[in-house]
Length: 375
Image 1 (spheres, helix red, strand yellow):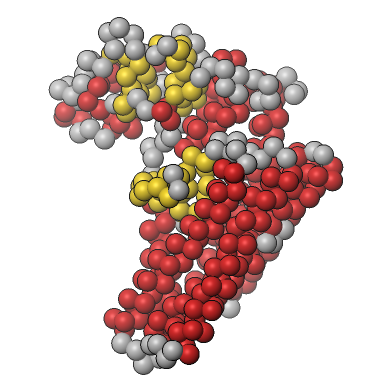
Image 2 (cartoon, one colour; image 1 turned 45 degrees about the horizontal axis):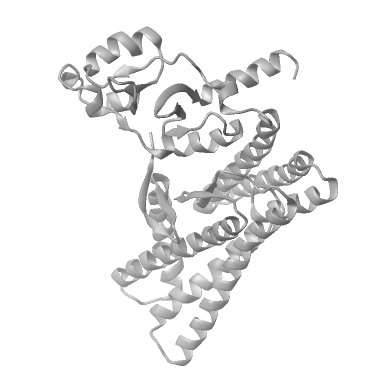
Protein backbone atom coordinates (compact mmCIF):
# COMPACT_ATOMS: atom_id res chain seq x y z
CA UNK A 1 0.00 0.00 0.00
CA UNK A 2 1.41 3.36 -1.02
CA UNK A 3 1.86 5.59 2.02
CA UNK A 4 2.91 8.71 0.15
CA UNK A 5 0.81 11.61 -1.05
CA UNK A 6 1.61 13.01 -4.50
CA UNK A 7 1.70 16.81 -4.33
CA UNK A 8 2.88 17.80 -7.82
CA UNK A 9 5.87 18.00 -10.15
CA UNK A 10 8.97 20.18 -10.27
CA UNK A 11 11.01 20.17 -13.47
CA UNK A 12 9.01 17.12 -14.53
CA UNK A 13 9.97 15.19 -11.37
CA UNK A 14 7.01 13.87 -9.32
CA UNK A 15 7.12 15.03 -5.70
CA UNK A 16 5.48 13.01 -2.92
CA UNK A 17 5.17 13.37 0.84
CA UNK A 18 5.38 10.25 2.99
CA UNK A 19 3.06 10.09 6.00
CA UNK A 20 6.11 10.23 8.32
CA UNK A 21 6.82 13.75 7.04
CA UNK A 22 3.78 15.08 8.89
CA UNK A 23 5.14 13.62 12.13
CA UNK A 24 8.52 15.30 11.80
CA UNK A 25 6.94 18.54 10.55
CA UNK A 26 4.94 18.72 13.77
CA UNK A 27 8.00 17.86 15.88
CA UNK A 28 10.17 20.49 14.16
CA UNK A 29 7.45 23.12 14.52
CA UNK A 30 6.89 22.22 18.17
CA UNK A 31 10.63 22.31 18.94
CA UNK A 32 11.02 25.72 17.30
CA UNK A 33 7.94 27.11 19.05
CA UNK A 34 8.81 25.74 22.49
CA UNK A 35 12.57 26.22 22.71
CA UNK A 36 14.29 28.01 19.81
CA UNK A 37 12.20 31.06 18.92
CA UNK A 38 11.07 31.90 22.49
CA UNK A 39 14.76 32.50 23.27
CA UNK A 40 15.56 34.34 20.04
CA UNK A 41 12.37 36.41 20.11
CA UNK A 42 11.85 36.88 23.84
CA UNK A 43 8.69 38.84 24.60
CA UNK A 44 6.88 38.07 21.33
CA UNK A 45 3.31 36.72 21.71
CA UNK A 46 2.91 32.91 21.55
CA UNK A 47 0.62 33.08 18.51
CA UNK A 48 3.30 34.87 16.50
CA UNK A 49 5.96 32.46 17.75
CA UNK A 50 3.91 29.50 16.50
CA UNK A 51 3.25 31.20 13.13
CA UNK A 52 6.97 31.85 12.68
CA UNK A 53 7.74 28.25 13.65
CA UNK A 54 5.33 26.87 11.05
CA UNK A 55 6.80 29.12 8.34
CA UNK A 56 10.34 28.13 9.34
CA UNK A 57 9.51 24.43 9.26
CA UNK A 58 7.98 24.80 5.79
CA UNK A 59 11.04 26.70 4.53
CA UNK A 60 13.30 24.03 6.02
CA UNK A 61 11.59 21.28 4.06
CA UNK A 62 11.53 23.39 0.90
CA UNK A 63 15.31 23.74 1.16
CA UNK A 64 15.64 19.99 1.82
CA UNK A 65 13.59 19.42 -1.32
CA UNK A 66 15.99 21.72 -3.20
CA UNK A 67 18.86 19.59 -1.84
CA UNK A 68 17.27 16.44 -3.31
CA UNK A 69 16.41 18.23 -6.56
CA UNK A 70 20.09 19.09 -7.02
CA UNK A 71 20.93 15.38 -6.87
CA UNK A 72 18.13 14.64 -9.33
CA UNK A 73 19.15 17.32 -11.84
CA UNK A 74 22.71 15.96 -11.96
CA UNK A 75 21.35 12.42 -12.31
CA UNK A 76 19.08 13.37 -15.21
CA UNK A 77 21.92 15.20 -16.95
CA UNK A 78 23.91 11.97 -16.70
CA UNK A 79 21.03 9.94 -18.17
CA UNK A 80 19.94 8.37 -14.89
CA UNK A 81 16.11 8.41 -14.76
CA UNK A 82 14.47 9.79 -11.61
CA UNK A 83 11.06 8.32 -10.81
CA UNK A 84 10.36 10.94 -8.18
CA UNK A 85 11.32 12.50 -4.87
CA UNK A 86 9.69 11.60 -1.57
CA UNK A 87 9.88 13.75 1.55
CA UNK A 88 9.84 11.63 4.68
CA UNK A 89 10.82 11.68 8.35
CA UNK A 90 14.55 12.32 7.82
CA UNK A 91 14.41 14.69 4.88
CA UNK A 92 14.02 13.36 1.37
CA UNK A 93 15.11 10.71 -1.08
CA UNK A 94 15.33 10.69 -4.87
CA UNK A 95 14.17 7.44 -6.46
CA UNK A 96 16.55 6.35 -9.22
CA UNK A 97 15.85 3.38 -11.47
CA UNK A 98 19.60 3.02 -12.13
CA UNK A 99 22.72 3.58 -10.06
CA UNK A 100 25.69 5.64 -11.34
CA UNK A 101 27.84 3.58 -13.67
CA UNK A 102 31.18 5.21 -12.87
CA UNK A 103 32.94 7.01 -9.99
CA UNK A 104 32.86 10.39 -11.71
CA UNK A 105 29.07 10.40 -12.01
CA UNK A 106 28.73 9.20 -8.43
CA UNK A 107 30.92 12.08 -7.21
CA UNK A 108 29.04 14.73 -9.19
CA UNK A 109 25.69 13.50 -7.90
CA UNK A 110 26.89 13.28 -4.29
CA UNK A 111 28.56 16.69 -4.11
CA UNK A 112 25.54 18.46 -5.64
CA UNK A 113 23.48 18.16 -2.45
CA UNK A 114 25.94 19.75 0.02
CA UNK A 115 26.83 22.45 -2.51
CA UNK A 116 23.14 23.29 -2.82
CA UNK A 117 22.76 23.47 0.97
CA UNK A 118 25.83 25.70 1.32
CA UNK A 119 24.55 27.97 -1.47
CA UNK A 120 21.16 28.27 0.24
CA UNK A 121 22.88 28.99 3.56
CA UNK A 122 24.87 31.82 1.93
CA UNK A 123 21.79 33.26 0.19
CA UNK A 124 19.78 33.34 3.42
CA UNK A 125 22.78 34.76 5.30
CA UNK A 126 23.03 37.65 2.84
CA UNK A 127 19.26 38.10 3.03
CA UNK A 128 19.45 38.20 6.84
CA UNK A 129 22.11 40.91 6.76
CA UNK A 130 20.14 42.90 4.20
CA UNK A 131 16.93 42.71 6.23
CA UNK A 132 18.80 43.69 9.38
CA UNK A 133 20.35 46.75 7.72
CA UNK A 134 16.95 47.74 6.35
CA UNK A 135 15.57 47.45 9.91
CA UNK A 136 12.97 44.80 9.12
CA UNK A 137 11.09 43.10 11.94
CA UNK A 138 13.21 40.76 14.07
CA UNK A 139 10.56 38.09 13.53
CA UNK A 140 11.38 37.96 9.79
CA UNK A 141 15.13 38.20 10.42
CA UNK A 142 14.97 35.30 12.88
CA UNK A 143 13.40 33.07 10.22
CA UNK A 144 16.00 33.80 7.53
CA UNK A 145 18.81 33.47 10.08
CA UNK A 146 17.50 30.05 11.16
CA UNK A 147 17.22 28.82 7.57
CA UNK A 148 20.78 30.00 6.88
CA UNK A 149 22.08 28.17 9.95
CA UNK A 150 20.14 24.96 9.37
CA UNK A 151 21.25 24.67 5.73
CA UNK A 152 24.87 25.09 6.79
CA UNK A 153 24.31 22.32 9.34
CA UNK A 154 22.66 20.08 6.73
CA UNK A 155 25.55 20.63 4.32
CA UNK A 156 28.19 19.83 6.94
CA UNK A 157 26.27 16.81 8.26
CA UNK A 158 25.90 15.36 4.77
CA UNK A 159 29.65 15.67 4.14
CA UNK A 160 30.44 13.20 6.93
CA UNK A 161 32.21 10.32 5.10
CA UNK A 162 29.77 7.58 6.00
CA UNK A 163 27.51 5.87 3.46
CA UNK A 164 24.64 6.61 2.68
CA UNK A 165 25.29 10.29 3.48
CA UNK A 166 26.55 12.40 0.60
CA UNK A 167 30.01 12.39 2.14
CA UNK A 168 29.87 8.60 2.20
CA UNK A 169 28.99 8.57 -1.48
CA UNK A 170 31.90 10.91 -2.18
CA UNK A 171 34.16 8.52 -0.26
CA UNK A 172 32.72 5.59 -2.21
CA UNK A 173 33.40 7.33 -5.52
CA UNK A 174 37.04 7.90 -4.50
CA UNK A 175 37.48 4.28 -3.35
CA UNK A 176 35.70 3.05 -6.47
CA UNK A 177 38.12 4.99 -8.64
CA UNK A 178 41.06 3.71 -6.55
CA UNK A 179 40.17 0.01 -6.42
CA UNK A 180 38.00 -0.28 -9.53
CA UNK A 181 35.55 -2.33 -7.45
CA UNK A 182 32.22 -0.82 -6.38
CA UNK A 183 31.51 -3.72 -4.01
CA UNK A 184 34.71 -3.12 -2.05
CA UNK A 185 34.21 0.65 -2.12
CA UNK A 186 30.64 0.30 -0.82
CA UNK A 187 31.73 -2.12 1.91
CA UNK A 188 34.31 0.36 3.25
CA UNK A 189 32.03 3.41 2.96
CA UNK A 190 29.18 1.47 4.62
CA UNK A 191 31.47 0.52 7.50
CA UNK A 192 32.23 4.20 8.09
CA UNK A 193 28.48 4.85 7.93
CA UNK A 194 27.76 2.22 10.59
CA UNK A 195 30.52 3.56 12.86
CA UNK A 196 29.08 7.06 12.57
CA UNK A 197 25.58 5.70 13.24
CA UNK A 198 26.73 3.95 16.43
CA UNK A 199 28.42 7.17 17.55
CA UNK A 200 25.18 9.10 17.03
CA UNK A 201 23.17 6.52 18.96
CA UNK A 202 25.74 6.47 21.76
CA UNK A 203 25.62 10.26 21.99
CA UNK A 204 21.83 10.06 21.98
CA UNK A 205 21.80 7.72 24.98
CA UNK A 206 24.26 10.03 26.74
CA UNK A 207 21.88 12.95 26.14
CA UNK A 208 19.04 10.89 27.61
CA UNK A 209 21.15 10.19 30.69
CA UNK A 210 21.67 13.92 31.22
CA UNK A 211 17.99 14.70 30.75
CA UNK A 212 18.13 16.06 27.18
CA UNK A 213 15.30 13.77 26.15
CA UNK A 214 14.19 15.24 22.80
CA UNK A 215 17.74 15.71 21.48
CA UNK A 216 18.66 12.21 22.64
CA UNK A 217 15.69 10.59 20.90
CA UNK A 218 16.44 12.46 17.66
CA UNK A 219 20.10 11.34 17.68
CA UNK A 220 19.13 7.73 18.34
CA UNK A 221 16.54 7.77 15.54
CA UNK A 222 18.92 9.38 13.05
CA UNK A 223 21.69 6.95 14.04
CA UNK A 224 19.35 4.00 13.59
CA UNK A 225 18.28 5.28 10.17
CA UNK A 226 21.90 5.80 9.01
CA UNK A 227 22.87 2.34 10.25
CA UNK A 228 19.97 0.65 8.45
CA UNK A 229 20.60 2.61 5.25
CA UNK A 230 24.33 1.74 5.35
CA UNK A 231 23.49 -1.96 5.57
CA UNK A 232 20.87 -1.64 2.83
CA UNK A 233 23.33 0.18 0.55
CA UNK A 234 25.85 -2.66 0.75
CA UNK A 235 23.16 -5.30 0.29
CA UNK A 236 21.95 -3.43 -2.78
CA UNK A 237 25.39 -3.76 -4.37
CA UNK A 238 25.44 -7.49 -3.60
CA UNK A 239 21.97 -7.86 -5.09
CA UNK A 240 23.09 -6.07 -8.25
CA UNK A 241 26.06 -8.41 -8.49
CA UNK A 242 23.91 -11.53 -8.03
CA UNK A 243 21.33 -10.33 -10.56
CA UNK A 244 23.97 -9.25 -13.07
CA UNK A 245 23.15 -10.48 -16.56
CA UNK A 246 19.71 -11.79 -15.61
CA UNK A 247 16.59 -10.61 -17.36
CA UNK A 248 13.05 -10.39 -16.02
CA UNK A 249 12.11 -13.44 -18.10
CA UNK A 250 14.76 -15.50 -16.27
CA UNK A 251 13.18 -15.11 -12.84
CA UNK A 252 9.54 -14.18 -13.39
CA UNK A 253 6.74 -16.55 -12.43
CA UNK A 254 5.00 -18.00 -15.47
CA UNK A 255 1.62 -19.77 -15.66
CA UNK A 256 0.20 -16.95 -13.57
CA UNK A 257 -3.12 -17.37 -11.77
CA UNK A 258 -5.40 -14.53 -12.88
CA UNK A 259 -8.98 -13.50 -12.15
CA UNK A 260 -11.88 -11.95 -13.98
CA UNK A 261 -12.98 -8.46 -13.08
CA UNK A 262 -16.61 -9.60 -13.06
CA UNK A 263 -16.45 -11.94 -10.07
CA UNK A 264 -17.35 -10.70 -6.58
CA UNK A 265 -14.82 -9.98 -3.87
CA UNK A 266 -16.40 -12.77 -1.81
CA UNK A 267 -15.69 -15.27 -4.59
CA UNK A 268 -12.21 -13.83 -4.96
CA UNK A 269 -11.47 -14.41 -1.27
CA UNK A 270 -12.97 -17.91 -1.13
CA UNK A 271 -11.76 -19.24 -4.50
CA UNK A 272 -8.43 -17.47 -4.90
CA UNK A 273 -6.91 -15.89 -1.78
CA UNK A 274 -7.71 -18.89 0.45
CA UNK A 275 -6.97 -21.47 -2.24
CA UNK A 276 -3.71 -20.14 -3.69
CA UNK A 277 -2.57 -17.96 -0.76
CA UNK A 278 -1.12 -15.23 -2.97
CA UNK A 279 -1.49 -11.58 -1.93
CA UNK A 280 -2.51 -10.30 -5.37
CA UNK A 281 -3.78 -11.46 -8.74
CA UNK A 282 -3.72 -9.87 -12.22
CA UNK A 283 -7.19 -9.01 -13.52
CA UNK A 284 -7.88 -9.90 -17.17
CA UNK A 285 -10.66 -8.97 -19.56
CA UNK A 286 -12.58 -11.61 -21.51
CA UNK A 287 -10.21 -11.25 -24.47
CA UNK A 288 -7.16 -11.80 -22.25
CA UNK A 289 -5.93 -8.20 -21.92
CA UNK A 290 -4.60 -7.09 -18.52
CA UNK A 291 -6.80 -4.40 -16.97
CA UNK A 292 -5.47 -4.22 -13.43
CA UNK A 293 -4.26 -5.89 -10.25
CA UNK A 294 -6.34 -6.88 -7.25
CA UNK A 295 -4.53 -7.01 -3.92
CA UNK A 296 -5.56 -8.24 -0.51
CA UNK A 297 -5.16 -4.66 0.77
CA UNK A 298 -7.67 -3.45 -1.82
CA UNK A 299 -10.14 -6.07 -0.64
CA UNK A 300 -9.65 -5.11 3.01
CA UNK A 301 -10.47 -1.50 2.12
CA UNK A 302 -13.99 -2.60 1.17
CA UNK A 303 -16.37 -3.28 4.11
CA UNK A 304 -16.86 -7.05 4.54
CA UNK A 305 -20.65 -6.77 4.24
CA UNK A 306 -20.19 -5.41 0.69
CA UNK A 307 -17.91 -8.18 -0.58
CA UNK A 308 -20.77 -10.18 -2.10
CA UNK A 309 -22.02 -7.19 -4.13
CA UNK A 310 -18.69 -5.58 -5.08
CA UNK A 311 -16.96 -6.77 -8.23
CA UNK A 312 -13.22 -7.16 -8.53
CA UNK A 313 -13.02 -4.53 -11.27
CA UNK A 314 -14.57 -1.99 -8.89
CA UNK A 315 -11.90 -2.53 -6.21
CA UNK A 316 -8.81 -3.34 -8.27
CA UNK A 317 -5.81 -1.13 -8.96
CA UNK A 318 -6.29 -0.12 -12.58
CA UNK A 319 -3.42 -0.83 -14.92
CA UNK A 320 -0.78 1.88 -14.87
CA UNK A 321 2.75 2.27 -16.15
CA UNK A 322 4.53 1.59 -12.84
CA UNK A 323 2.87 -1.85 -12.60
CA UNK A 324 4.31 -3.06 -15.91
CA UNK A 325 7.74 -4.27 -16.97
CA UNK A 326 9.15 -5.84 -20.15
CA UNK A 327 10.60 -9.33 -20.02
CA UNK A 328 13.93 -8.25 -21.55
CA UNK A 329 14.72 -5.57 -18.96
CA UNK A 330 17.53 -6.28 -16.49
CA UNK A 331 16.19 -8.02 -13.39
CA UNK A 332 18.00 -5.55 -11.12
CA UNK A 333 15.80 -2.72 -12.39
CA UNK A 334 12.71 -4.47 -11.05
CA UNK A 335 13.63 -3.87 -7.41
CA UNK A 336 13.28 -0.07 -7.26
CA UNK A 337 10.14 -0.26 -9.38
CA UNK A 338 8.52 -2.75 -7.02
CA UNK A 339 9.56 -0.68 -4.03
CA UNK A 340 8.04 2.51 -5.41
CA UNK A 341 4.75 1.28 -6.93
CA UNK A 342 3.21 0.40 -3.57
CA UNK A 343 2.30 -3.23 -4.37
CA UNK A 344 5.69 -4.98 -4.40
CA UNK A 345 5.23 -6.74 -7.72
CA UNK A 346 5.24 -6.12 -11.47
CA UNK A 347 3.15 -7.53 -14.30
CA UNK A 348 5.05 -8.77 -17.36
CA UNK A 349 3.17 -8.32 -20.62
CA UNK A 350 3.77 -8.72 -24.33
CA UNK A 351 1.37 -7.20 -26.84
CA UNK A 352 -0.92 -6.34 -23.90
CA UNK A 353 -1.12 -10.04 -22.94
CA UNK A 354 -0.05 -11.46 -19.59
CA UNK A 355 3.09 -13.61 -19.82
CA UNK A 356 4.35 -13.48 -16.23
CA UNK A 357 4.60 -11.71 -12.91
CA UNK A 358 7.57 -10.88 -10.73
CA UNK A 359 7.49 -10.15 -7.01
CA UNK A 360 9.98 -9.36 -4.31
CA UNK A 361 9.42 -12.91 -3.09
CA UNK A 362 10.66 -14.29 -6.44
CA UNK A 363 13.96 -12.48 -5.97
CA UNK A 364 14.21 -13.60 -2.33
CA UNK A 365 13.73 -17.22 -3.46
CA UNK A 366 16.54 -16.77 -5.98
CA UNK A 367 18.90 -15.59 -3.24
CA UNK A 368 17.83 -18.46 -0.97
CA UNK A 369 18.68 -20.97 -3.70
CA UNK A 370 22.04 -19.30 -4.30
CA UNK A 371 22.76 -19.39 -0.57
CA UNK A 372 21.79 -23.10 -0.31
CA UNK A 373 24.14 -23.85 -3.21
CA UNK A 374 26.96 -21.95 -1.54
CA UNK A 375 26.97 -19.07 -4.03
